[in-house]
Amino acid sequence: MEFDGTVLIVDDEPHIRKYIGLIIQKLGTPTIIEAANGAEAVAAYAQHQPDLVLMDVNMPVMDGLQALERITLAHPDALVVMLTSLATRNVVERCVELGAVNFVRKDTPKETMTQVLSETIAEYFTAD
Image 1 (tube, rainbow, N blue to C red):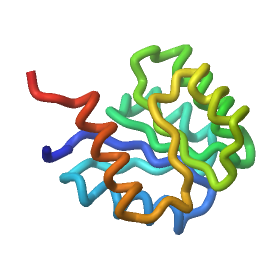
Image 2 (cartoon, rainbow, N blue to C red):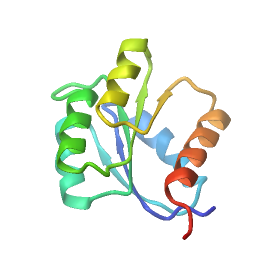
Image 3 (spheres, helix red, strand yellow):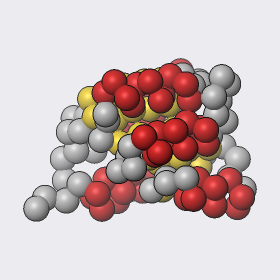
């Protein structure tokens, strides 16, 4: 499947945004929008209505959980995959409660992360 949707990548570290962008580009020709914190993510989502959001949990200004909650309250159909370095059961459960469709650790091997994102995209963007 060739994914050509719009993806919002949210992380406070520019090199992580670039890394995630390179992974998502392996799945097609998406348009990539970046945000450096949750507040920027909420604003970028409202402006661009991306097809998919890949968002870090721990960020300054507004963390990913707060941004996830705001995005999914305003846009219940938002597809958000949460990314983090530290995945505790409580954080994963909270992300699911707030509407995340998947959760991936940032230290997941590149091939596995590509596969997880590919499967997530295939689940939500199948041809009718």
